[in-house]
Length: 126
Image (cartoon, rainbow, N blue to C red):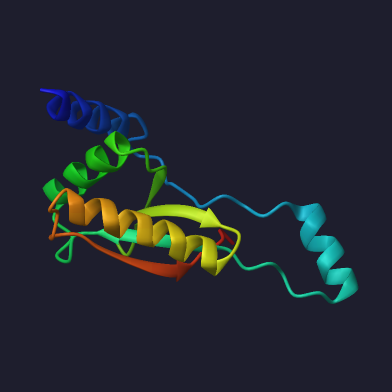
């Protein structure tokens, strides 16, 4: 019953932003300006992509309910017309890999073999 309630909550929240585009968090302009002036390379952020191999809608709703239930913070972006579930952004690749390892362990304990994860570069909105 609890899983059904979580799934309903996720679906209700997913419908709240109907028609609005979701963008990744934007970098602060002051930081970008100071880095441009000093010639420093911008700090790189990382995400953990999580999803079923075949991108089924039902599987994504089940996945997001499972992530909520197990304490993982995530966000959803639309890329090439498909919803992408991402954990992060993380300040370092090592931090993202640690979160991916924790996720993989919890997925294995729950016997959820239909879910993949991958560490990717965080895409900033331009």
